[in-house]
Amino acid sequence: MRSMLPLGLTLITTLSVTGSGFAQGSALPALRAGDRAVDGRLVQPGTSERHMTMLQNDTAVGRATLRTVIAEAPAAGEPGLLVANTFTSPRGVIYDTSLVRRRTLQPVWHHSTQPRRRMRLEFGPDSVTGLVTPNDSASVRVLHVTEVPTFDSAVMDEVVAALPLRRGYATRLPLYIYERGGLLWFDVQVTGEESVPGPDARATPVWEVSVHQPSLTVRYWIAKESRQLLRTETDLGGGRRMVMTL
Image 1 (cartoon, rainbow, N blue to C red):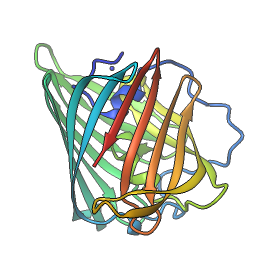
Image 2 (tube, one colour):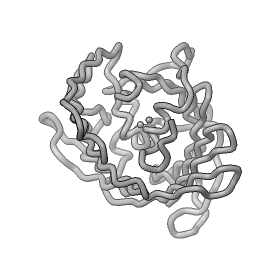
Image 3 (cartoon, rainbow, N blue to C red):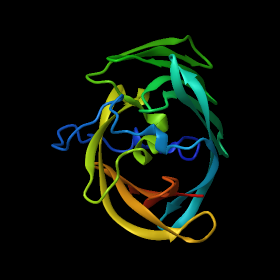
């Protein structure tokens, strides 16, 4: 999903290093990758582009663009989705591609190319394995044992949008983040509903969803009908906010 190496990295990257102590002891009911409560059928193939603004005390200090292409593809012998993210900033371009099972968004593999390294990960029922190859040193093998099947943090947006969102809904999600040593738990809660401008500027009913850990909160505005992600705001503390819009 990396201390605010700003705008050269994705939102998940930022989440993985800002603060410490994710809500590992939460009493919320937990999901795991493969649970059918996560309905991948709500995620539609297509292309979207979102614009990120980094704010310091409400003044823009950096900008980036995230282009996401979602396509149907076979995944371990069953229907799947290929989710390709291209993150472009003044620091360079990051390419992240994830293959997930269509129905549940359970990950199969993840490939990443960044200015300073390449990474390939394979997701099993109780582990994540792979290889990380820095540009200036030898490859490092990855072997992280996970207590439950975990989601790929690179597709967190799609997983949150595919949850059975409703008034009062709350759960915990296990997400794999290599930079933080493996599986981390995130608290997810529907905190409200409202209408916000959609892609055509019309008022669109949305769920407001909070993804939380002790030192940081991410707020999503997700269209109720289409499950399109219309806006994201991340409070990073110290007057810093990251806003992502269509």
